[in-house]
Amino acid sequence: MNGHADGPELSAYLDGALSPEPRARVELHMSSCADCRAELDSLRHMKLALSAAPRKAMPADLALALERRFVEGAAAPWYAAFTRPVIWAPAGALALATFAVSLWLRSAATLDEIPLEPLLAAHARYSAEALVPEDNLVASNYSDQLSDLGDAPDYE
Image (cartoon, rainbow, N blue to C red; front, side, top):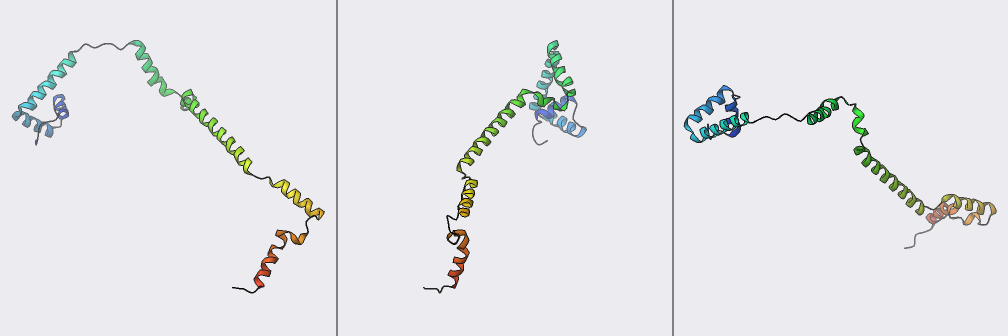
């Protein structure tokens, strides 16, 4: 080994979980390193102390709560998570905010628009009553005016 055996390797050696090759390397290193032997003895002492510690029984209400949560919870239908208010409260707030913003944007857009129907009706009425002569309408003779300009000589 290049350096000392690290903690997880010593713990695996103590538990007998090392394969033969790493186990032989640790044993070879332990024969010449007093620090690693002291660490191994410390780990062995801690393992014995923990195994001798008194064990307490789990309270019955905790065992039932854990069983309900992990055993019976696994059998719950897939949609059970969506029936909790934890999901619906933020989703409802987001839907309400989206609705309010869409109403506000719709009302703001209609304030800027000029209704076209009254203008078209007025144009049709004025044209029908001949209050505006046809030859003076901008849309009726604009093409003619452009073609007349094309025939004019250029004065530069």
